[in-house]
Image 1 (cartoon, rainbow, N blue to C red):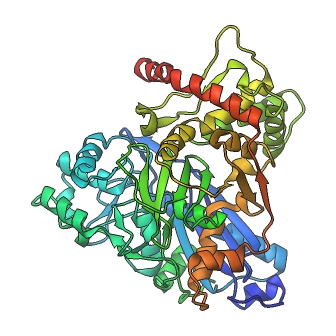
Image 2: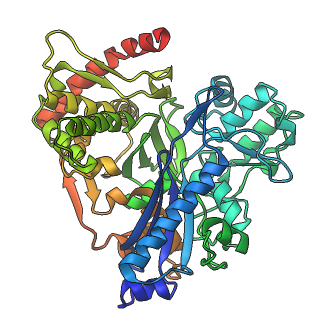
Image 3: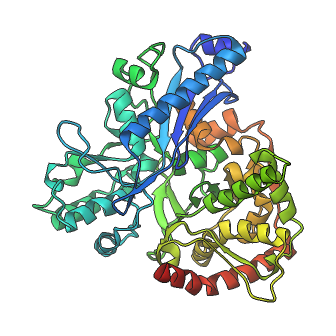
Length: 530
């Protein structure tokens, strides 16, 4: 798509804007971009998972009411800001949190409540599959959820005719196409990067293992597509489902639905070998595009792909910034109670800035952000904790530095495995709301990784913007590969701030991490006791 010197209102009214939607763990966000990937408008809807029958889930009704609310908000913003109502787009795309379990019968009915990536009840299946496939199959992967249902002989298993992710489900509902982007598909079942498809040999191994208990895997999984493909078009039913006003017109081309890992790579321009990115939200994960296979299987590392199908080593931590957000909310409430109310953004800014004044090792404080189980640290459940010794230095600055260090603690343990594998990394980018306060979380992440960390001006827009860029790429006719498209059409003039690791911070974080590793026994005891 080439730039056209017209106003945003004309771009939107003429249907040349591009819409990306991402269903995150706590927020559904829509992002509208122009031909140069500039943000024209955003809309969002807050939602939360529910813990029911010992499983984390969202209802499908919540999916659609949330999507409709986010879309209605972006339409309202466009109307107020530009005086036009969008009726069509050059392209659209949907992304969502990866993995999980959405199983449907022949009539398209959901057979069991949606099981999200956050569930850790799949230990037996994941261990069996890791041995069978000679590849790390994490607890949250779709194949682990499927096989656990098979192992448990759940009554719905014989009726399964389609298995997909949240992004795949929404895309199917809007377009009628049972497809998935290769990056999201790589969190369902291992991908062969040579074919950009499910690994045929491993599929055959699983079919032998599960024969007679569930249908052949190829019959159940979505078709795999790579970035740049057109993955269907908005149907009339899909348009009515998303836009309850009836204004949105069908026929809009869609990019392949992707996972939040893939949109994070795109949002940071990190899709080429020797590049990586960290995405921080409810979960936190690092993606490093690798040049060669790893020497052995590591439970700390997933092998997934970029949206183009190139191999990626992923360090995924179930727990990200949610506990930090809970503390920030409490400080916002305190300010209100004290008669000096401040906005949530002002709270974050003040707390983060204060953290810079803390001791480099957080004064002896420890903060565990484990709201859910954390496979990298061997924990099936989580218990958020703040732990300190009597001689530690409890100040607001140290408390906040400990909380921010805690967000990166488990990630640093996993990244150490990549370092030991000799994986080369030239550039590390970061994105997510935690990086909105300039120079704080970015600086501490650089200390945790002992590597420069770059944040683009678009970083806080996150995955919805990344999905919009992927949709724009699907509508591009230049023939460029994804890396070239991002470098030349999206990031050529983007503002990027890079922070090098401060030696004092690196040393301080190292001390903190040693204490963090030793204190995991305290976290385990809390899980056992509370």
